[in-house]
Image (cartoon, rainbow, N blue to C red; front, side, top):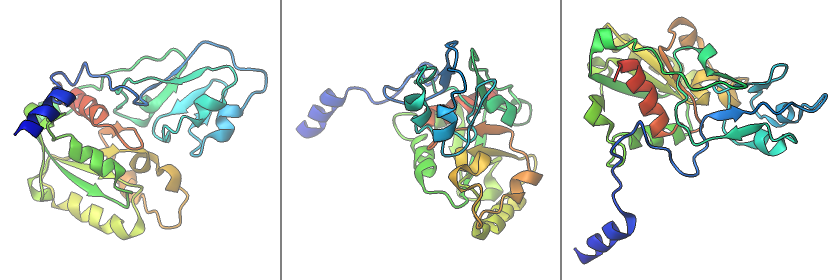
Length: 244
């Protein structure tokens, strides 16, 4: 008992009272592109990006491809790129994932509220992922984040789910399983793409063993970027979509 009390005194209160206001220290969140002009002919940030997430003229960073490695921030001689600790990065479409100079985070429209009200049940499928995003999603219902207090919970069977949460680049050997999970879900239903791998294929988008036809036929209603996705980023995106 005394050890538990000592740990509590040392760690403080782990429970996050207001997920909307939380800004984790040391977290690489939404990037900001300053007004500082790029050097003539400079392509340093684009050259070091492992997923081709950066385009130039105008400078644009695609959060759907970004792995948040910060190589671009370190390579930029003009110090134009900075990763903030802002977890608000979700979007309702791929265009909303594009960050340009001066852009500010925008809330996702409450597209799920009309059909599902204030409660949704989610089934997660790891479609060839490395388990990093999967571990972070598990953390959404721990004592720190407690997403269940908002009526959001995970279920074991797709037959009990409103939404299908996809992680991983979708490998060929998981494509059929993903489709089966979707087919088993009762209507109305929706898909959420979580992480760079699910959104764009990430580092594996050119891989011979990826099979991404599923997302070509079923468009996600929410895209949650990250590598891995932070629980707060997922919480912000889903609470926006639910109108909470």
